[in-house]
Image (cartoon, rainbow, N blue to C red; front, side, top):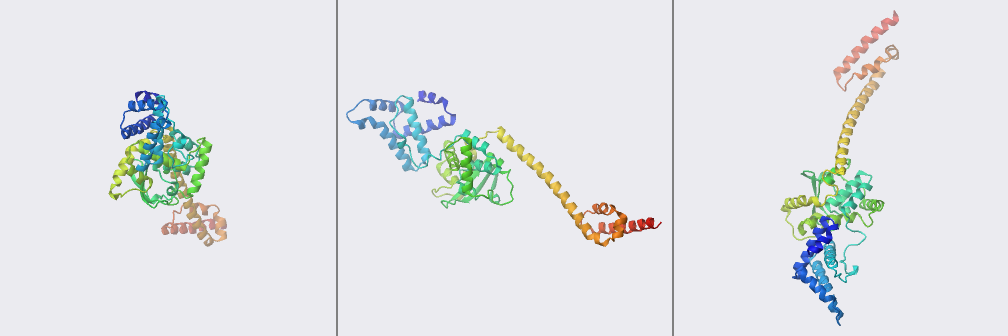
Length: 374
């Protein structure tokens, strides 16, 4: 066992832990120690008149995979178990005679689980804020795209510290789900405008097609929108989130569920969130998002001030349009540019201000008329 873990040094820490955990589950099910299993492998490699005796260990692995399927484990879980067990025996120089046909089926290979670096590359390829937010929300929530496009601003619950959640009924299976997103997704979501209550106004098919194009442009073949859902499932399992909780978050059919356990679901999600991070705490990407938010807030403030100024001009112009017909042509000629200057002092629909302006105009007209006569 120690030799095998040493040989896994070139794998990520997350992968090493997942492999060891999966193999330990197999050992516990089989009832023999890793060294005893190696001895079985040695015996099975000895030539025998009955070829079936050379496949004893392979048959045991297949039986274990069938056991996992019977338990209801996901294809992703069964595949990671398959890979871990095969890795152990290959590392100890007893490669199993198992082909890819023995690989647990269920999900298409064309929609595989992306690595963190691949998700980052996908994000870098996304130019629009909406698609970037969609990628982060899919990997944070594990939702299907068909449920993603049905999320609404008004239905979001703020759990604090950058965590949001929604209660939904899934489109595909019509089951209740409680999905969450963490700080990486909420940072991106805050950059979106809220003109519509729907967070994404495009179709699920459009998002899926764009993400497939982004994957191709980023050079991450086989990664799709559904692959981000698998990413969530694998990472939550690696964080030891109970299976029933994972299914409820992802909107899959599950056993009887107590509605009062929402706080437990969120606590489990928050505890496991580091497994879902792809940007990293304090990374350049996160800081860039925060800076963008501050810039947008500043732009918004400036736009509000500019809009207020435009509205004031519109009010003054409207007043001028109402007031101008009452001023004879000769009076306007005498006053020249003074009329619009005076009207600019008018601050709104204040009647007292209007009366003052009228008195001033009348006095000024008399004064100018006297000068002209003289």
